[in-house]
Amino acid sequence: PTLRPLSVQLLIGLVIFGWWRSRRFGPIAPVAVSARHNIVDHTDALGSLYYRTRDGLGVLRSYLRQLAWELRLKHSKGREAAVLAPIAARLGKTVEEIGQEFRDASNAARGKQLDRAVAAGFIRRLATIRRAAVEAGIARTRGSRPNGGRKK
Image (cartoon, rainbow, N blue to C red; front, side, top):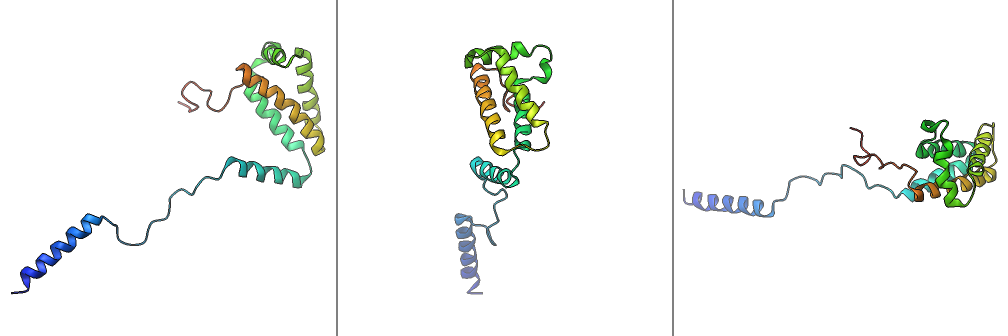
């Protein structure tokens, strides 16, 4: 009976101390989402894989598909000149020259195999077209939908 008040006070003190520190019991839970790697790491890895295949055909096809999507060329059948005119003006070229770049790259992408250096040349020329389209405000990007890139 004489130790009961002391033990109750000690127990209350331990509970208050535990609550004050508010530490959870057990091991620390692992992080639910691992840290994202930098986009450069992804690009380097993808570039290495394409380099090992020694074929630039897949890269060129992917780039053409992405560029056609950004410029909405599939939805502009018959009105390609209207889409390409601001790009041509920015680059100081004619619409026919820009169209010829697309035709040359498309013809090369239809083959069975394409040398990496040739594919890189096409991609460089198409990248200048893409940059001019972005600067002219023509190219759509992932976040170009009215609600911030999310579907309704």
